[in-house]
Length: 343
Image (cartoon, rainbow, N blue to C red):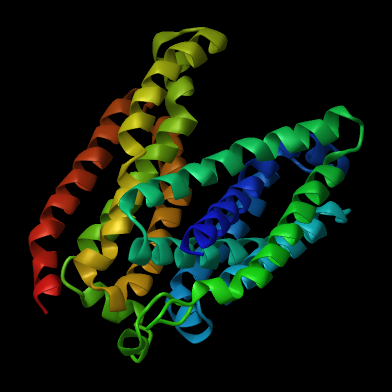
């Protein structure tokens, strides 16, 4: 049963990744239909990101009240409804409206599932969990491409993903009894741990090592997203390479940075119960993810501003500063978390 639940969790993370690349792959067709500038995709993306941050910050409260299984089921259902809403939208304003439940659903399921796996499964399963997100994020554009190339339109691409999410919701409903272990409820925490009240953001930040690990998460996603967005542009503008050549040269660097970054996120997430205590892990993971999303949204535009007003040549230095800050904060955090372990 324990392995069956793990398979369900993997499927849930595939579903979490499925919609993440849809907007980018569908937007060239969507913006023409709605007669809006290309840049308007950023507005929808920001609404989704804000919703994700909000729900991540609330994950501790929600999970302690309802349990991981129910929060995951409700979140996937909310995402399915939002995707179906996208598929029937005929205006940009409608897309913005449906982007709200889209973001709110994503944050809660992400934080809750990460915490559950961190508490009950080996670290390799956490790595596979995030691999499953990548599988979903890779499959999503292919489904959208199938709909577009078949003349069905972007609406059907979103509808196909919504149907897959509805099927997963049904599977999650039937799996609810599997989330309970002996001595725990479906939050994955023991009866004693469940008696603790949800922590406020102020209380979380006061935990020894919390500020450092939150900055680490912010820097990690800032590094990853800024690299992916600006690497090719840097090579074109700095070295005068043709765009197609820059994309190929940048690929090697992107692969190396990707290989370096890949283990960081799941490893730190999995060590959260050990560093901060199982009773605080859900709260910590929720806030960690909120800071990660903020780094994803904030820092690529920040470098865009630097490139536009100062120089794109600062790109390598910008990344090195973020990397140094991330490494320094993590190293500074390690001695402090021993206090949490000893308590």
